[in-house]
Every structure is written in C-alpha cells, then in structure tokens.
Image (cartoon, rainbow, N blue to C red; front, top):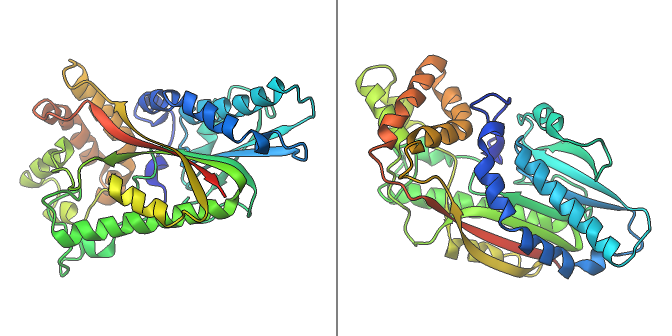
Length: 349
C-alpha cells in the first residue's frame, strides 16, 4: 500500500522535494570514493566483452536532481573504467529511475540535462521496491539512498484501539510507545528489508553491485519522540481545529533500524550477497544554532511529510496552518545537527 514512501512528492515549487533535497545530494557526493572502489572491484563484470548494455538503477529515486547526479556519476565511472583499459567496443548504459507510481516522473525527466543516450539512456519503472521490479539477472548496479527507513505499510495493530500496540496520541513510534507498538514496527521493518534484499538478489547479475545508504540508530532503544510538528498537532486539537482521533489514527511510516537489526537482515542473505564495504557515517544535517534553522527545518520536513498529513487530515488549510506554526516550536527543541547513516556495498554471489 505504501511502498517506498520517500518519494510521494510532486512538482517543482518552493515546498517540493526537488527544491529541498540538497542535503541528500550532499550526502551522496560524500561517498563517491566508495562507489569508485566498488566499481573497480567489480571490473571483470563491467569489462566483460560480451556485454552490450549495462543497466543501473536508483530505487526510491523521487524526482529531485540529486538522483540524476547520482546515476550520472555511476554511468561516467563505468565508462571511465572501460576507457582506462582501452576498451573501444560500443557499450550502451541504461539508467532506470524507479519509485512508486505516484512519483512525479514528469518533473524528474524534465530535469535530465542531456538527451537520451548521453551518457545513458534513461527510463522510469514505477512500483514499490519491497518486491520484484525487474527481470531476473538484468541489473548490474543498483542503489538506494535515504529511502529504506520508510516502511511498506503501517502495521494494522498500531491504529487499532483494541490492540496493545495502539500507539495513541503520537505520530511516531518512540521509546515511550507501547512495547507491542515498538515490536510491530520492528517486525515490519525486518520483513521489509528481507523482501527488499531477496528481490534484489534475483534481479542483480552475478557480480552486480547493490549500494545502500539509509538512516539508522546507534543505540539499542528507540529515541524519545520530541518532534515539533507533533506539538503543533496537539495545539490544534486543543483549539478544536482537528480531532484527537486524527492524531490517534496516524503514524508516520518510518522506522530507524538499529545496527543489530541491520546485521540480522544481512545474515538472512549471506548465501546471496557478499558485503564488501560497511561503514557508519555522520550525515551533516541542519545546524540547530543557525538563525535560519527553524525555517529551513520546516521546509525540509514539509517537503517529505505534507502528502501524508494532507491525505490523512483532508483539510489543506489546516495542514498549511500546521506548517506555519512549526517554526515557533522548532526554536524550543534541541535536535542533533547530524544523522547516523549506514553505508553498505554488497556484491551478488
């Protein structure tokens, strides 16, 4: 139902993901050297004389220019590798942008700065990456960045008033959520990552690369939910502008896995993949001490969350009011200026 929700955003206006994805692009550029090493380590695959087409894919691409820059970089690195060994055999690269069907592919394709075939042919494949998207053994390089913390769906028990997992009065699962709610989210996240990895194992060719970047938590326990938007929501409940039920029946479809949870999922596919690189990174987020922090944080949150909130509440004016009030709440919070990110490079056996 939800799939890789990181990209349920559209358009190119000031509140769009396209206009507010610079930090994601910055994060991806910081791992260029790792990508170069991964491609070099799989040189026998990319230099195979029998290949006529190499296919690379960004899973959960959304529609910002950062996905174009990422696929451009991979395509040019593969081309550079072949040129280094003097390979003059004609080779075509197909770059595939993949996300849910509701993704704004029109905006994305309009942003591609070069014509088809230079340096790659490009296309879009709609669908959730929590399942098969491509024919067996057809992909040579697959990557996903800042998308795997989104879940395929919210566990049904989370919004069931008769369930011990009912996460009432909160839009996030956190340390203070009922233990059954935490367990339900953790199980959903485990199931989703299992399906994701097994789907890619079927789609990648032998020797193909799978690169993953996604937020994690370093502690065993979940963080305490202290997000300004939730405070705004509760204020509007007190003012009678939205109902208590609107908050009780909403949960944001994301979960930060712990390092142990990620390792457990990787253990389930150790017969299909070899992990050739694993690294925890600090992703530079917004500086809480900056004078523009509150307004900028609100813009980023709005870009990724508005479609979910608006669909749930069903009143655009009230939702806009929520975001208008959010900066005043951000100033009294003290979030970290960094996110913990895991970077994994896997090779298909």
